[in-house]
Length: 237
Image (tube, rainbow, N blue to C red):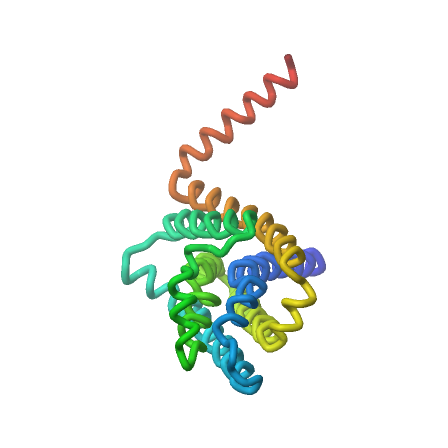
């Protein structure tokens, strides 16, 4: 019995950890930020670019961890339900994922005008790098949905680790932005964006289904029962 419980716990931990890291990393999407980082830091010294990348990723981790820790309070303060946030987060992730599938910059993160303004700023670590490019609305919504689904300490720990690992990978990619850009090129970056976008669509659909199921449990069970009856009828026909 203890072995079965242990196996189930490991399986649940792996499942939650993979979903949490995948969702956060794909929506933060440091690969898409690399060319923007190169553009807005053009002319800066290597030391300054490295410092701004580090500060941006530390601030990104701090923002996402803050929403992770204060997510429950935000739900209570605004009277939000988990179902509503799952649906809203799913829609937002879907919009981001569709832009990734088309290999174009997501308008939920930043605009061309904001990027052009950032070119002339002496320090871009906080705005627009940390927010909204890395810790944008999609990232924050994803973290809040994941933390609302967490009910055990190990789930919060895995979520925090996912945030920190994503921030670390983002820093390494921004620090080596020139190398990453040359290695991947436009074609390689577009391929990775589309693959990540496809997986993010699946995560967004999962959020939406969970939100609809929580918001309309009776309707969901009715549809499920009707689908089961139809399937049974087709098999016996």
